Amino acid sequence: MSLSNINGLNIDAALKNCGSEKLLLQMLSDFQLSIEAKSNEIEDLFENKNYTDFRIKVHALKSTSRLIGALKLSELAETLEHAAQIEDLATIQLKTPRFLALYRSFSEILKDYIQTDNSEKEKDIISIDTFNDLTEKLVTGIEEYDYTTLENAQKELGQYELPLDFYPIYDKIVSCINNVDFQGLSDLLPEIKVIKEGDCK
Amino acid sequence: MSQPEQEVYLIADIHRLVIQSLIRDFNDAKITLKCIDPDPEQVKYIPDGPVNVILSITESASIGVLRLLHQKVLKTGTHLFICGKKSGLSIDEENLLKKTPAAIFENYPIDMEKFQKMLEFNNRLKKRILIVDDEPMMLKSIKSWLQDEYETYMVNSGMCALDFLERHPVDLVLLDYEMPGLSGPDTLNRIRIQAETKNIAVIFLTAKDDKSCVMKAVEQKPDGYLLKKQTPEEIKMNINDFFKRFVVRV
Image 1 (cartoon, each protein chain N blue to C red):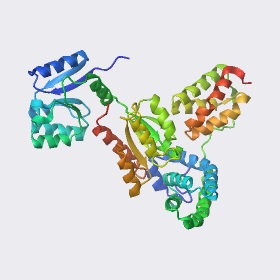
Image 2: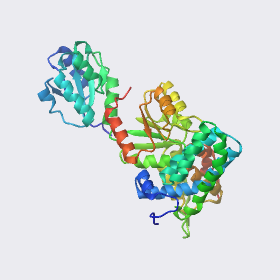
Image 3: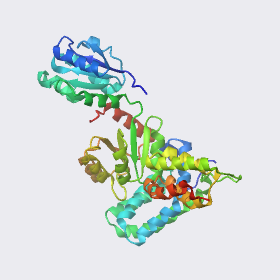
Image 4: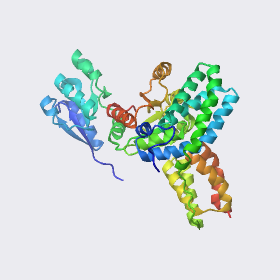
């Protein structure tokens, strides 16, 4: 995938900010995948006039958009962060729709950069031993805050056809791992343990 | 796994009874001492780099020795331990010592348990860093910048950070400032009031660069304040420098 010319991104700045092309590609994917949820969240906070949380969310986006070289978006996020800080409601009202439109435009621009593990090839059905081993690793990874173990276990699980009962929870696990959400993962622990103990079909 | 042999340079007049007693304590703790006379000509042969050096200042701290050690600490990451009371030092010597990061043990016999904990920290090849940020992209980026040189962990909230620190020792927390729920400053407060975590080094790593936030953060006496807009290389260099100069608190 060529990085030389992506609409709306300053690739030189992005490479400098990320430090490597490999990390930048991963960040472009992460950024794209989070646009829908985060833009909706910011929009809700804007509509509900919750400017404290609105400020925190645009502040975070200021850094991530800068990281991938979306400098105009980053500047706009900074403007909104400052406006929320000083309760400049006129600026928030005026610039938030433009900000959200620009943010959401990256969904289309970056769609080719999404990194997924979804290969078309047929997957083997996971054996009970492998399933138990990998879910045990998930449990350990969650309890020990060990992201590498979690990420590896999840990737390995993704290579197999899993028990049907496990798919709903598996999707939640993937989402929590992508978001480094250990609280969310801890909340899933009881369900993982129940399935691991052998009720899955 | 057996402990690697621990080697420490001791700059002291070994004929003094108190130093002979110190040497016995180190032998009992299975720490190998290399004794050096308090003479600048001899001190300069201590290798550069993250070696551990004890300086007995009671009678042995000439300005020449102190100058050499000051350079070694600041430029090469030598870990310096000062033993004895400063009362015999000249004003120049005392001022130089104030500018030199060092662990101070004023009384003999020295607290060997404390000393060994410090030594363990200094000798750890990969220091452990907990990265706290509500934004997963920032967590993954910072981890990727640091993971070759450090053992890195990530959590996405202040509450998770506190839970993590209750169970896992780390050498440094890199803490975001602006987070939903427990903010960075609130998290730092909670770290500082818990007996088990109060000594952990905490550096803010944040995109907040306005004066009021920086001032507010500095009031909380973090161990540093880094900005996310620095390049990965700059951030890494700042953290490397921090560990060179940091005197672990135990």
